[in-house]
Length: 297
Image (cartoon, rainbow, N blue to C red; front, top):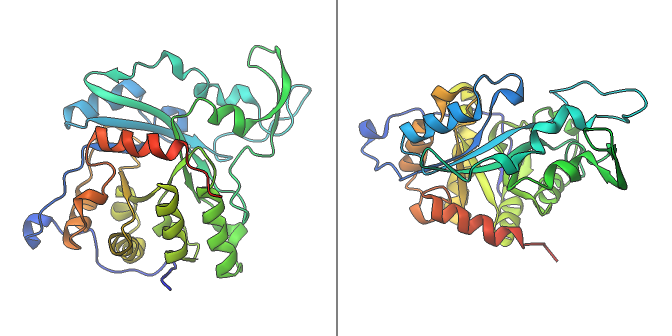
């Protein structure tokens, strides 16, 4: 049984593959990125798309935060919990071109895992009104309304306090339940979440559901204490035949498509090209299409 703690360090992902003699893998998709609607990010969607085109990225996934870190809980007659109006940038994706400046463009979100049951932000926030004040006419939640128009969702832990002291079985079940959400395609930056889990069990579920484990550039650049965990996750994915996604987690356009540390890490361990879902747009779209209809019995 492999256990990932996401805490201890190790030298991985930091060496240039040209120096180590490793052959970099082909990666042509960046599927974890943020625009200024994540509030602590700084670029527009078009700035990100142009940056992707400049780095020969075939497919860009825009995944702004869907999280309590963006807005305080609303109060008042029209709101119970969080207000749909504060999340309306997720609701008008229909105006986005599917190909822009030669880049295939997908829209999604990065949703916080908020409890040990693996539930995602907004699951318990009722929504009764559209953004113009019109009644929805049926009961729904903020999560359901936002997810409806997303191509895919990344499920990530950003605040692990709820998991402190929890058993390995419970934290493992948390990730399993998150993967079982029909819209979730990717588990985000598990190497830096500071939540221990049974790696083999979670990876087996991801493989069974046709879903992806992320290797995250920002983690390797800015959270070097998590590099050892990231390396072990990547190695075990290779051993078990589990597909991975790659994302810069860029919060500014100049970082879009910069996946040097990810390429170096995967090259160092001899990661199979066939298990990189983001090697080209066609492969990623195929993985997404198959996973959309996948529900665990």
